[in-house]
Image (cartoon, rainbow, N blue to C red; front, side, top):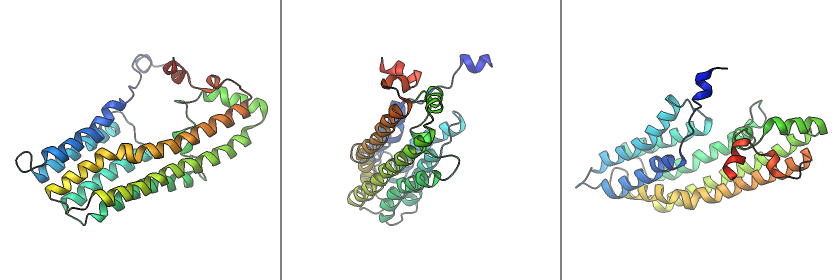
Length: 242
Protein backbone atom coordinates (compact mmCIF):
# COMPACT_ATOMS: atom_id res chain seq x y z
CA UNK A 1 0.00 0.00 0.00
CA UNK A 2 1.24 3.46 -0.84
CA UNK A 3 1.71 5.31 2.46
CA UNK A 4 1.44 8.65 0.75
CA UNK A 5 -1.99 7.76 -0.57
CA UNK A 6 -3.03 6.35 2.79
CA UNK A 7 -1.91 9.38 4.78
CA UNK A 8 -3.17 11.93 2.26
CA UNK A 9 -6.56 10.82 1.05
CA UNK A 10 -8.16 12.94 -1.64
CA UNK A 11 -9.96 15.81 0.00
CA UNK A 12 -13.63 16.03 -0.91
CA UNK A 13 -14.95 19.24 -2.38
CA UNK A 14 -16.68 21.50 0.12
CA UNK A 15 -20.40 21.88 -0.73
CA UNK A 16 -20.31 25.41 0.73
CA UNK A 17 -17.37 26.36 -1.51
CA UNK A 18 -19.14 24.89 -4.53
CA UNK A 19 -22.33 26.88 -3.82
CA UNK A 20 -20.33 30.09 -3.27
CA UNK A 21 -18.35 29.77 -6.51
CA UNK A 22 -21.19 28.42 -8.68
CA UNK A 23 -24.19 30.41 -7.41
CA UNK A 24 -23.66 33.11 -4.78
CA UNK A 25 -20.62 35.03 -6.09
CA UNK A 26 -21.70 35.00 -9.79
CA UNK A 27 -25.23 36.10 -8.83
CA UNK A 28 -23.95 39.02 -6.72
CA UNK A 29 -21.50 40.17 -9.42
CA UNK A 30 -24.07 39.96 -12.20
CA UNK A 31 -26.87 41.68 -10.31
CA UNK A 32 -24.91 44.28 -8.31
CA UNK A 33 -21.46 44.92 -9.78
CA UNK A 34 -21.86 44.68 -13.57
CA UNK A 35 -23.24 48.22 -13.75
CA UNK A 36 -21.22 50.81 -15.73
CA UNK A 37 -20.14 52.61 -12.55
CA UNK A 38 -18.57 49.42 -11.16
CA UNK A 39 -17.08 46.65 -13.30
CA UNK A 40 -19.05 47.36 -16.46
CA UNK A 41 -21.41 45.08 -18.38
CA UNK A 42 -19.00 42.82 -20.29
CA UNK A 43 -16.18 42.70 -17.67
CA UNK A 44 -18.76 41.98 -14.94
CA UNK A 45 -20.28 39.20 -17.04
CA UNK A 46 -16.90 37.59 -17.73
CA UNK A 47 -15.70 37.91 -14.11
CA UNK A 48 -18.92 36.32 -12.85
CA UNK A 49 -18.47 33.38 -15.22
CA UNK A 50 -14.82 33.03 -14.20
CA UNK A 51 -15.76 31.73 -10.73
CA UNK A 52 -17.73 28.60 -11.75
CA UNK A 53 -15.39 27.99 -14.70
CA UNK A 54 -12.38 28.29 -12.37
CA UNK A 55 -13.93 25.81 -9.94
CA UNK A 56 -14.66 23.37 -12.78
CA UNK A 57 -11.09 23.63 -14.10
CA UNK A 58 -9.71 23.12 -10.59
CA UNK A 59 -11.77 19.93 -10.21
CA UNK A 60 -10.69 18.69 -13.66
CA UNK A 61 -6.98 19.52 -13.47
CA UNK A 62 -6.08 19.37 -9.76
CA UNK A 63 -8.59 17.07 -8.08
CA UNK A 64 -8.80 14.86 -11.20
CA UNK A 65 -12.59 14.64 -11.00
CA UNK A 66 -13.87 14.42 -14.55
CA UNK A 67 -17.39 13.05 -14.63
CA UNK A 68 -19.99 13.18 -17.38
CA UNK A 69 -22.28 15.50 -15.41
CA UNK A 70 -19.37 17.77 -14.44
CA UNK A 71 -18.37 18.06 -18.10
CA UNK A 72 -21.93 19.00 -19.07
CA UNK A 73 -21.97 21.60 -16.30
CA UNK A 74 -18.76 23.11 -17.66
CA UNK A 75 -20.22 23.14 -21.18
CA UNK A 76 -23.34 24.87 -19.83
CA UNK A 77 -21.27 27.66 -18.26
CA UNK A 78 -19.18 27.99 -21.42
CA UNK A 79 -22.29 28.28 -23.61
CA UNK A 80 -23.70 30.96 -21.31
CA UNK A 81 -20.52 32.91 -21.94
CA UNK A 82 -20.82 32.47 -25.71
CA UNK A 83 -24.44 33.65 -25.70
CA UNK A 84 -23.56 36.70 -23.60
CA UNK A 85 -20.36 37.75 -25.35
CA UNK A 86 -21.74 37.35 -28.90
CA UNK A 87 -25.14 38.77 -27.89
CA UNK A 88 -27.33 35.98 -29.26
CA UNK A 89 -31.10 36.06 -28.81
CA UNK A 90 -31.98 35.56 -25.10
CA UNK A 91 -34.24 32.61 -26.05
CA UNK A 92 -31.04 30.55 -26.36
CA UNK A 93 -30.47 30.90 -22.62
CA UNK A 94 -33.74 29.04 -22.01
CA UNK A 95 -32.83 26.43 -24.62
CA UNK A 96 -29.39 25.95 -23.09
CA UNK A 97 -30.79 25.75 -19.54
CA UNK A 98 -33.23 23.02 -20.61
CA UNK A 99 -30.77 21.13 -22.83
CA UNK A 100 -28.18 20.28 -20.16
CA UNK A 101 -30.43 18.36 -17.71
CA UNK A 102 -32.29 16.83 -20.67
CA UNK A 103 -28.99 15.47 -22.04
CA UNK A 104 -28.19 14.05 -18.60
CA UNK A 105 -31.62 12.36 -18.44
CA UNK A 106 -31.03 10.78 -21.86
CA UNK A 107 -27.49 9.74 -20.90
CA UNK A 108 -28.73 8.10 -17.68
CA UNK A 109 -31.25 5.98 -19.61
CA UNK A 110 -28.87 5.13 -22.47
CA UNK A 111 -26.11 4.15 -20.02
CA UNK A 112 -28.45 1.50 -18.62
CA UNK A 113 -27.78 -0.51 -21.79
CA UNK A 114 -23.99 -0.18 -21.50
CA UNK A 115 -21.48 -1.84 -19.14
CA UNK A 116 -21.24 1.46 -17.21
CA UNK A 117 -24.72 2.55 -16.04
CA UNK A 118 -24.67 6.05 -14.53
CA UNK A 119 -27.07 4.94 -11.78
CA UNK A 120 -24.06 3.28 -10.15
CA UNK A 121 -22.26 6.63 -10.06
CA UNK A 122 -25.27 8.59 -8.83
CA UNK A 123 -26.85 6.29 -6.23
CA UNK A 124 -25.46 2.74 -6.10
CA UNK A 125 -21.93 3.70 -5.05
CA UNK A 126 -19.52 3.13 -2.17
CA UNK A 127 -19.98 6.69 -0.90
CA UNK A 128 -23.57 5.91 0.08
CA UNK A 129 -23.62 2.13 0.42
CA UNK A 130 -21.54 -0.72 1.82
CA UNK A 131 -21.25 -2.42 -1.57
CA UNK A 132 -19.06 -5.43 -0.55
CA UNK A 133 -21.52 -6.37 2.21
CA UNK A 134 -24.56 -5.83 -0.02
CA UNK A 135 -23.18 -7.88 -2.90
CA UNK A 136 -22.11 -10.68 -0.55
CA UNK A 137 -25.67 -10.86 0.80
CA UNK A 138 -27.13 -10.75 -2.72
CA UNK A 139 -24.94 -13.68 -3.78
CA UNK A 140 -25.84 -15.66 -0.65
CA UNK A 141 -29.56 -15.19 -1.30
CA UNK A 142 -29.36 -15.43 -5.11
CA UNK A 143 -31.13 -12.11 -5.61
CA UNK A 144 -28.61 -10.28 -7.81
CA UNK A 145 -30.91 -10.50 -10.86
CA UNK A 146 -33.71 -8.88 -8.88
CA UNK A 147 -31.35 -6.03 -8.00
CA UNK A 148 -30.78 -5.36 -11.70
CA UNK A 149 -34.55 -4.98 -12.17
CA UNK A 150 -34.70 -2.56 -9.24
CA UNK A 151 -31.78 -0.61 -10.71
CA UNK A 152 -33.67 -0.19 -13.98
CA UNK A 153 -36.66 1.27 -12.14
CA UNK A 154 -34.38 3.57 -10.12
CA UNK A 155 -32.68 4.66 -13.36
CA UNK A 156 -35.99 5.80 -14.83
CA UNK A 157 -36.76 7.70 -11.62
CA UNK A 158 -33.37 9.44 -11.76
CA UNK A 159 -33.95 10.30 -15.43
CA UNK A 160 -37.34 11.72 -14.43
CA UNK A 161 -35.63 14.01 -11.88
CA UNK A 162 -33.47 15.50 -14.62
CA UNK A 163 -36.46 15.78 -16.95
CA UNK A 164 -38.29 17.76 -14.25
CA UNK A 165 -35.21 19.98 -13.94
CA UNK A 166 -35.12 20.47 -17.71
CA UNK A 167 -38.75 21.61 -17.88
CA UNK A 168 -38.38 23.93 -14.88
CA UNK A 169 -35.13 25.34 -16.27
CA UNK A 170 -36.79 26.25 -19.55
CA UNK A 171 -39.88 27.83 -17.98
CA UNK A 172 -37.95 29.85 -15.38
CA UNK A 173 -35.28 31.02 -17.86
CA UNK A 174 -37.96 32.02 -20.38
CA UNK A 175 -39.72 34.12 -17.74
CA UNK A 176 -36.65 35.66 -16.09
CA UNK A 177 -34.22 36.30 -18.97
CA UNK A 178 -35.79 38.55 -21.60
CA UNK A 179 -33.22 41.32 -22.10
CA UNK A 180 -30.70 41.48 -24.94
CA UNK A 181 -27.32 39.90 -24.07
CA UNK A 182 -24.54 42.44 -23.61
CA UNK A 183 -26.76 44.84 -21.66
CA UNK A 184 -26.80 45.70 -17.97
CA UNK A 185 -30.36 44.37 -17.66
CA UNK A 186 -29.33 41.02 -19.18
CA UNK A 187 -26.60 40.63 -16.55
CA UNK A 188 -29.07 41.47 -13.78
CA UNK A 189 -31.58 38.94 -15.11
CA UNK A 190 -28.90 36.28 -15.44
CA UNK A 191 -27.86 36.98 -11.85
CA UNK A 192 -31.47 36.57 -10.75
CA UNK A 193 -31.75 33.31 -12.70
CA UNK A 194 -28.56 32.03 -11.05
CA UNK A 195 -29.83 33.01 -7.59
CA UNK A 196 -33.25 31.36 -7.89
CA UNK A 197 -32.09 28.27 -9.77
CA UNK A 198 -31.32 26.34 -6.57
CA UNK A 199 -34.60 26.75 -4.65
CA UNK A 200 -36.88 26.79 -7.70
CA UNK A 201 -35.22 24.15 -9.87
CA UNK A 202 -32.78 22.05 -7.86
CA UNK A 203 -35.05 21.25 -4.92
CA UNK A 204 -37.95 19.65 -6.89
CA UNK A 205 -35.57 17.55 -8.99
CA UNK A 206 -33.63 16.58 -5.85
CA UNK A 207 -36.87 15.37 -4.26
CA UNK A 208 -37.45 13.03 -7.22
CA UNK A 209 -33.83 11.84 -6.90
CA UNK A 210 -34.46 11.09 -3.21
CA UNK A 211 -37.54 9.06 -4.16
CA UNK A 212 -35.26 6.95 -6.40
CA UNK A 213 -32.75 6.54 -3.54
CA UNK A 214 -35.37 5.49 -0.99
CA UNK A 215 -36.93 3.10 -3.51
CA UNK A 216 -33.56 1.44 -4.08
CA UNK A 217 -32.82 1.26 -0.34
CA UNK A 218 -36.19 -0.37 0.32
CA UNK A 219 -35.51 -2.93 -2.41
CA UNK A 220 -32.02 -3.59 -1.05
CA UNK A 221 -33.43 -4.30 2.41
CA UNK A 222 -35.76 -6.89 0.89
CA UNK A 223 -33.18 -8.47 -1.41
CA UNK A 224 -30.44 -8.69 1.23
CA UNK A 225 -32.79 -9.75 4.04
CA UNK A 226 -31.51 -6.91 6.23
CA UNK A 227 -34.04 -5.27 8.53
CA UNK A 228 -31.64 -2.57 9.75
CA UNK A 229 -30.94 0.04 7.07
CA UNK A 230 -27.71 1.09 8.82
CA UNK A 231 -26.15 -2.25 7.85
CA UNK A 232 -26.43 -1.27 4.18
CA UNK A 233 -24.89 2.19 4.50
CA UNK A 234 -21.23 2.98 3.90
CA UNK A 235 -18.92 3.47 6.90
CA UNK A 236 -18.49 7.13 5.88
CA UNK A 237 -22.24 7.76 5.87
CA UNK A 238 -22.69 5.96 9.21
CA UNK A 239 -20.03 8.20 10.73
CA UNK A 240 -21.71 11.33 9.42
CA UNK A 241 -25.11 10.21 10.74
CA UNK A 242 -23.63 9.99 14.25
